[in-house]
Length: 86
Image (cartoon, rainbow, N blue to C red):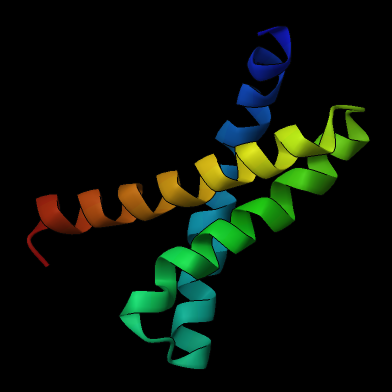
């Protein structure tokens, strides 16, 4: 349980990075909408695993935290779009 509490600040910091980088990739590559969640999750894992490795945490927690960060970034983006009316 303590390990999960240790990764929460890292995941919180990775979510906005994942959101921004996913949007950059989406516009630069003209990515199809159905692949955006996959790219977001992969980006979250790619950012979270090295960050937790540097903090000497279990790499499996990095994968778990990256999945959480990627899915949270997708949900954050869709929530902002829904409330802004775009």
